Image 1 (cartoon, helix red, strand yellow):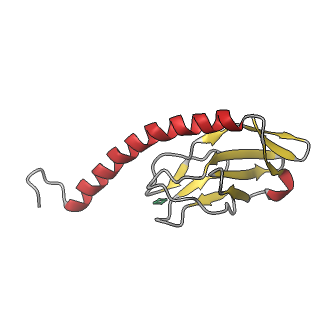
Image 2: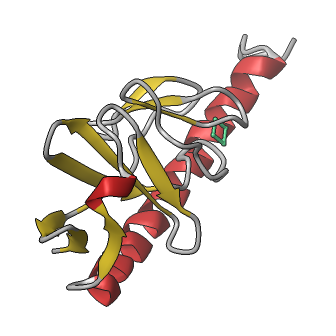
Image 3: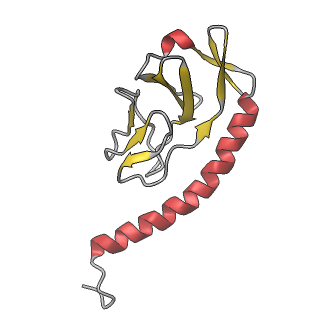
Length: 134
Ligand code: FES
């Protein structure tokens, strides 16, 4: 055991948090750019996003949810833990299959680790039968 009393596991965990923080700073810039470049674009049909569920738009790396009837949310589909793509939301939970993190479908907040940070949110609105980046 190292002299500072931290076991190997704790040290790896601390390094992971530090790396995650750095990655997040980069992520938010990327997400802001993505939001800008997609502004005004229809990214999905409302009919393709079930209540309590959702869909992943793989090429845009966006996950859409409908946590309550008529309420649509969009988040980055890149898990804040190590960058895997999240799975299709079910029962108002967005899961990452890589290490089991879970995120709330209404806020993107991390509800189960190892991810600590939530998914970055995209602003969207409904126009007709389409979901549009606002
Ligand atoms: S990359 Fe998602 S839980 Fe690890």
